[in-house]
Figure (cartoon, rainbow, N blue to C red):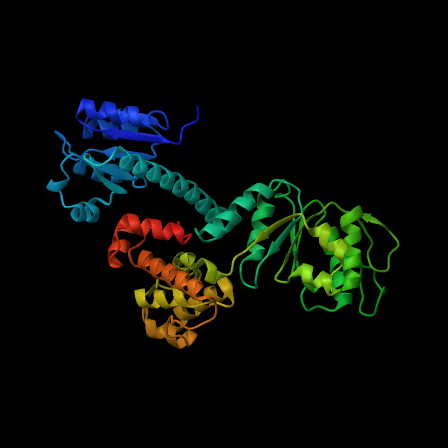
Length: 448
């Protein structure tokens, strides 16, 4: 029978340990340890443990000492302290020094411990899966961010990449649509073939047709030699059409023919050429609204439908901004052989609060410019204020009251996590919140 996870139960009282095993064995795979030393040995032997229930007062290595060593071996595992002597220990001191996931007295109702373990296991599994996704996205695709919306994007890439499905990527300018297209191609069976990229925006119709389908010498004024088009060049591989909503109606007809038949002709040539191309397209436009206005062909719209991946604007995933700042600073300094520069906490806070209408591309440009323009190794709040002409969050703006309050809460928590280097206990303390309440609030705000 599948279990919810693996829990390490640690207590030197055999009766308590037996009760704990009976309590959790139906829902979890349980590992029992009768001392702190046994717990550390069990942790080293077992590849996967999702949570530890740890008594504090034990002979030899007590629970507090064991907790520190557990964090050294597996810093990601949540620990639930379970003690019969809660009055002997300051819960606040334990929280600050040992950073447990929860702290439960043995005199409390069993459901309190059951709930704490359930939450700890769920938190660990979500964090582990998220971290695997985030690491793969960064190292394989150059995509940065661990927010919930970006995790959805990473999962979609993993699902559709190996298929041959058409993919439509939606998102505002600067959100990273080309990165997603590259990631999809790299996961496909065509990864060893060409990925050809063409931006359809603001180009004359003749030029677009010529670049997509190619032409023969003399087929129009300026055609001084034969030219291979993007479709022919991408044969066997992937063609990424960025800003496909900017295509004129005539080119849309020719694109539809290629998608329906796999056939095309160069301009000025009667020869039919067969091509095998996986199409990925992207747009910041509402294509359905364009169909209704007669600006985009309905048959092409449905032909392109395939799988849709939506990229969020940066202001809707502010929790990724601290990591993006670090990534852009390190990359820019390494490329230009600068000494590594740092952003003051107050400067980072301003970057988190700014709305970034140009999205990730604008943030990258801002970070790189601030690194270049600031003579000191430290980028200050004043430097950011001058560059962005922005002094910080204010209660103004558009949107319903509850939406603006929610956004303000999200920003406060993101800033606290950034200041504390993502240490939940320290972040909670800086906001005068109990860590368990901090986690609940962060989760409710879609930050975990």
